Image 1 (cartoon, helix red, strand yellow):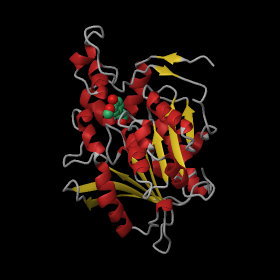
Image 2 (cartoon, protein in one colour; image 1 turned 135 degrees about the vertical axis):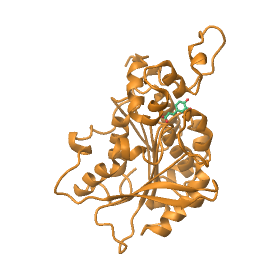
Image 3 (cartoon, helix red, strand yellow; image 1 turned 120 degrees about the vertical axis):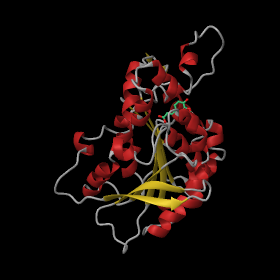
Image 4 (tube, rainbow, N blue to C red; image 1 turned 90 degrees about the vertical axis):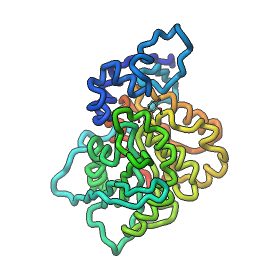
Length: 331
Ligand code: FER
């Protein structure tokens, strides 16, 4: 198959606008130079500088180029049209905002928690920790992805295990708002593992009726949160058995560092799910992860759909991922 080359900014700007509503408000029109520059962590002047003047660092631009190879195809059929539509006549779960003391950050931090329909302290539930992107916060998944609707539907259809979903704020610093330059907050995403492992997971396990072994704990996220999930999930296989990276961003560790011990990863992982849209300028990150996993024979799902860097992809990724976790047969 001949590689297809796509280099559009417009497509991606639209997608980015859907994702980073906060960012869009801060820097205006998603098609503007400021918006693109903000996504790339550059000043508008730097973004506009002629490419010939000096070799510019290769950032994880949203503008591609995108080169697709033979492996870059769908692993699953598309989600049915109504997968993300609120349904009447089924039981619904609940969403609540919680606050916990973060030892590593030294502040009280927020997380949005989905409890499944009929949540009861008489049962113990598995937990999915679900992470947001560079312009997002603990509300981003609810705002753009309505995971409660997707899970209510899957649970009603008996396609997903009743589970708790915890949506924290992955920007582990005292001021954890995206602010006017979200890219400047990228380092705080890199130290979120201390807060997650040291404070949030213990808090959730104390407050909710949950199973606490690794086989009942999953980590997944979109974009920056996808990179965090791959980094922290694969780096803490004793804590997470199910790991998902959706459109993972350039914060993803180099593939060889992600999986330093392929045999351990093989034996410990119940599911490693890597997905991206074929119109997402960041696809090369996920392609690199897939290529390395393939080379090292680490079983994983590599799912590429027709979307861009947007919630259409992320909602469907959650739909596919959440059906395949906490099951006995998944690989
Ligand atoms: C980058 C491009 C995009 C980057 C992060 C992103 C850290 C994140 C995008 C998102 O979360 O949507 O170069 O560097």
